[in-house]
Amino acid sequence: LVLNVDSDTEIDSDVVSKLVRKMQDPAVGAAMGQLKASNRNDSWLTRLIDMEYWLACNEERAAQTRFGAVMCCCGPCAMYRRSALLLLLEQYETQFFRGKPSDFGEDRHLTILMLKAGFRTEYVPDAIAASAVPDTLLPYLRQQLRWARSTYRDTLLGLHLLPGLDRYLTLDVVGQNLGPLLLAISSIAALAQLALTGSVPWWTGLTIVAMTMIRCS
Image (cartoon, rainbow, N blue to C red; front, side, top):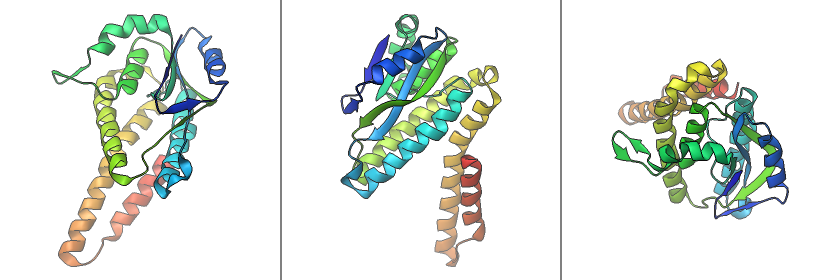
């Protein structure tokens, strides 16, 4: 087994044993732990990011693992089956997208390769890892842009996997990719109408509330 831990991440003393326990099932190719913000109390932003991590792990990843496929075993703390890594190493080291080398979002890409090879990917909620997160807005936005590029790229690469996975995962992937686009379109349309007419359309707020309710459900 191979454990991946980011340089800005500290893991609890029992993380290895808990991830190893999950990996005893030979069908599991990768497992990730629960992420927290180690600098949660630094600012309002780090508190929000810590909340975002909790939701991403204990709602999104927990639901995905219920249906057999976590779509991204996050880089800060993830364990991989070495034999599977060796099978996928060449594909992993030579990532290309639209004919160009791609070196971002390696955790999501490796997860997609694991699923493509027929392995399950799992989330282990009691294997706790704490990462340092951005405490100012500009670095946070850069990080989110990088992650968004990875999400859309690897969604395209992994679309052919969805028919072989549970239907919930198709719904989840569609929501994860279309939701931000619809939110952006709604916000831009509202700002344009505000600038042109001085009023905010009621449907913008309704759209955002509806998308939030659908996503949470």
